[in-house]
Length: 168
Image 1: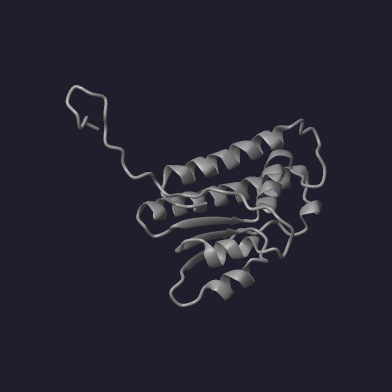
Image 2: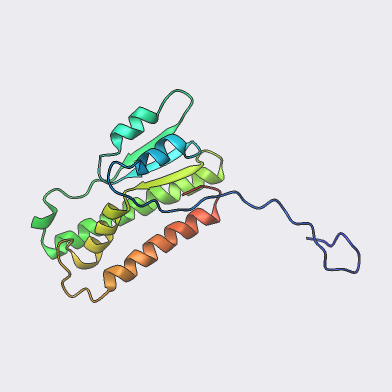
């Protein structure tokens, strides 16, 4: 930026980016999903892990409101997986999540998405724990590794969103 006053350090500031990156926490049935499906700026890219959100998505996908939806399924009978099977399943879920999230950020850069919703953070956290330890029901030799990975995954999601124009 050039100075508007010769010989000074004054610059013209651009309009700041209007963007919201937040985590909504609350008991079941309190409207967390509805914030994303009904009130967040659309088009909304909705990444769903647990299937319960399908009702809210179909309810709020009224004419004139665009919700792009993907469901990332957790493994069935997750507690019966061996540790190695659990790690592979968890990594597949994380890879799929990141691929879809990155695609939504790229779409936001073109103006095709305004909000990215991840529903729910609990299931994404379980997938992260699964990828790290192979389990979601116990911490076997974890020693904080899954917590560290949780922090890294969430940090990268927030940073990707903040780097583009999408709300998260």
